[in-house]
Length: 316
Image 1 (cartoon, rainbow, N blue to C red):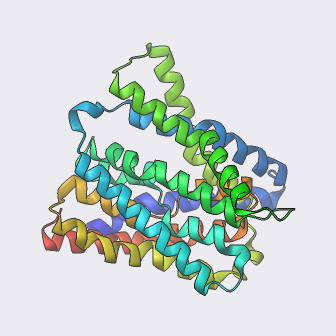
Image 2: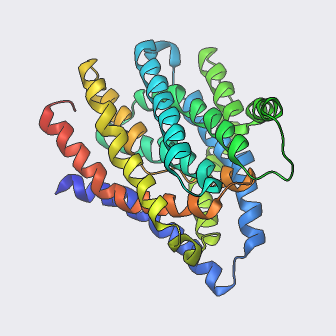
């Protein structure tokens, strides 16, 4: 029961902030222009600053575990390519492919993941290590699939799309911020208190603003029409991925904080930044928002179940 209450305390407040955004949209206080500007601001400023802060604040040299980072990277890659291949084969509406794939494999590792790890273990270095292994690939793979599957006004050949995807990766502010944060941590660069507090203030805006803008842009009736792919994505995200890869992690000897980091990477709700990227890259924002909402609601139950199973097995 304690684990269930804990999961509810993490996921339900996030869901309620989305509801607040939706409610403010219904009253007319927020509109499409707000959602568009907020999404752009989040994508280019607050989310990159959040990830930079999380990585730069850890002494990577002291805690770096190449085997663990490589597992996170390989697991993320396996999930992405299997889901994209499956979507190409089985998803009837091909306009949904980019949004479906991104939302099905990409977790809220930086936002909800660190909250879970800190609540269970206190300050932990495994969260940032998991972020280093998974989050850059989350963004690289998302750029690739959204570039190839997004709506385009002209028919472009494969090489043009590859070039476009490569340029989008190089320009992606989240990827840039992760690598800058890694450099700051490696070279142990310190900033004045004024700079650190400014960074912290901007980082604190990332999650609530992303959730408010997601709620404000949520189109309920259109989302209901896409309930089947949303539910399929949620099952893949919250059940199938951890069922396949958590036993592999256990067989490799990962336990405790490392296992929780892997569980969050595989089984936490879809990150709200998926919605921001989908909208910015001409993919299905309605489906993405629907999957974010559904996975956030269901995660309080599924994560509780996974934590119970891991504790029972003695892996955490």
